[in-house]
Structures are given as structure tokens and as C-alpha cells.
Image 1 (cartoon, rainbow, N blue to C red):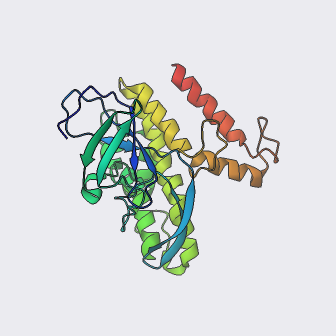
Image 2 (cartoon, rainbow, N blue to C red):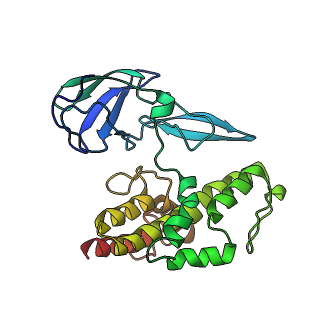
Image 3 (cartoon, rainbow, N blue to C red):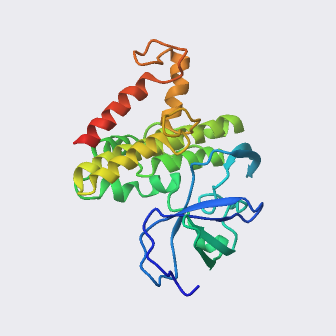
Length: 280
């Protein structure tokens, strides 16, 4: 391509087709670009909840995984899943029906900028050694476990079926079956890794000038992309987990005494705190 014939603004929507079924792929410009730009960074839309089920066979663990239409899975896992990636070459269409030709490499140019494992592996730099660090909550976890990457260490031990090597709180996964280890991985990914990321994003929002975007990202990590605009979706992160637990503990509803609504009292409280932080 000779380059952009006009400027492109951050967030501008583009559409193409995927590499498996010729279904539409929706992407958004990750940055603003001037006329003549020949290389664009685009983000896949991850809000489409149409899904199919497939087996994900990793080592000896087999689980059904929901693959959402515009999810291109490259990086963060042993085997990439390319069916929903943008086709390697073709035509992108803008919202004003302009077209542009492109080509790229599915494996090397599709980048997973954020992985749950990465949140744990970067914790030392982002939560312990940074300016105004260590952050209070992270230091408590580090002091207990004796490891900066305690969340990833826990998950890797569960995956491999071995004992953790913490200074406190060790678990021997050699005595736990595949189903139990799978549940440990799913739970630790949210309750250990994502939990601390949410806290640290709010801590960083207090430290830096771009506090609004950091605060918003904490809300995003708490909620996930599958809840929709009103929280009625079927997500995988804290928001939906709280809704699931409230039915079990009978703490649903605005007053925390309803089991029928499926909307957690905790979520009402948490989002009121999020809104207060947003206004400050």
C-alpha cells in the first residue's frame, strides 16, 4: 500500500474478513496516524459474544473453551488459534466505505499485548520497584509468599502437577487430579493475578497524571469485555464471579438479601467506589 491517503484517528473502525470462514473481523485503530503511514497497529474487537466450543488440548488437560468471533489468539498459549485472525492479505474497509489493501504475517504480526501471566511476571517492576513503591497490598502478598511472581508460580505448579516453593502457603499439586488443578489455575488467574493488577492500577492512578485512564483500566480488569454495557453478560472475571457467588451465599440484590436477582450486592458497592474515584 502507498500509505494512508488521509489521517486516521485513534479508535477508528475498520472491517476485514477472518482466515477461516470469511466472516467479518472488526478492528480499531490503536493510535492516530498521519497521511502516508504505511504500517498500522490495530486492535481486534473483543466484545462480540457469538461463540463456539472447541477442545483445547494442552499437555494432559482438556477443557472446553469459548472462542469469540473476533478473538485472534496468538501468544500467551502454547498453540495459536488463527481461525478468527484477519486474513493474511486483502482489503480493509473504513466506516465511510473507503478501502485499503494490506498484507501481514499472522504469527509474527499478531501480538498479544496483555496476558494474565504477564501481569504476574511484571509485578516486581510495576508494583515493588516503581516510583512510590512498593504498593501496600502487593508488599503484603510478597512478604507472605516470598516471590514477586507468586501468581504465575502458583499457576505453573498447578499446570505441572508439582508442589509450589513459597516461604508460606505451599500447595502440593502432585496430590490433586486434573480437574482440581484446572480449577486452581482458573481461580488463581483471577483471584491472585488480576486482583493485584486491579489494585495496582488504582494505586498508579493516584501517582500519575493519566489517572483517569488507569482508573478506567482497573474497572476493565474487574469487569472484562463480556459483561456488556449493563453487566448482564456472562463474563469470566470478578464481576461475574461475584454474581455467581451471591446466589450461593444469598447476598444478591441492592440490599444484599436477595437470592433471585443474580446481581451481587458486592458489585453495587464496588462500582459505587469506582464512580467516586472517577469523580475525583
